[in-house]
Amino acid sequence: MAQEIERKFLVNMDKVHLPDQGLTICQGYIQTADKTTVRIRIMGDKAFLTLKGASKGISRSEFEYEIPVTDARQMLDELCTGPVVYKTRYLITHKSHLWELDIFTGDNQGLIVAEVELDSENEQPELPDWITQEVTGDKRYYNSNLLTHPFKNW
Image 1 (cartoon, rainbow, N blue to C red):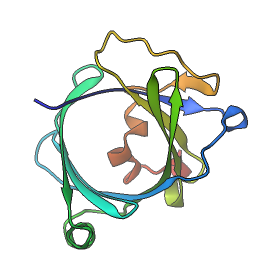
Image 2 (spheres, one colour; image 1 turned 90 degrees about the vertical axis):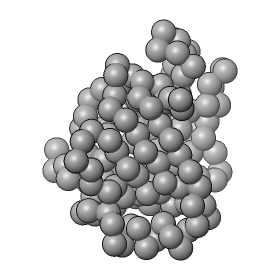
Image 3 (cartoon, rainbow, N blue to C red; image 1 turned 135 degrees about the vertical axis):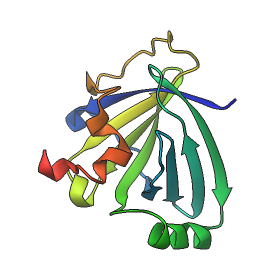
């Protein structure tokens, strides 16, 4: 089974050296009857359909499939409820881990979050000096929650 194990943190942008290029991301969510998350994401010139199970600690099942961008646009327009999330993602390697630093725009302007994927829940990655507060498990920072409770309203 595919599994996602990740931790999420807030960032001090004064200490970050961003790569020259970031990936523009637009994503929306299809409403489900249970705790399954169904995400449609356009990232650069590619698109993905992702299904995620309920979180258990910092882990959850995750299945991601590349789909045609035209299909993703139609799904975002016709199947996703509410607004979409816009952000730019920067990939930063620190020690032995790849960090995904997301700078949100639109209704979530001002929110900056870094995530790191782990091989096990017990793994302790060395944190970059630009990490401030851990927000793993804080539902306010779930991308799916930012649709209905955007950062601008906090």
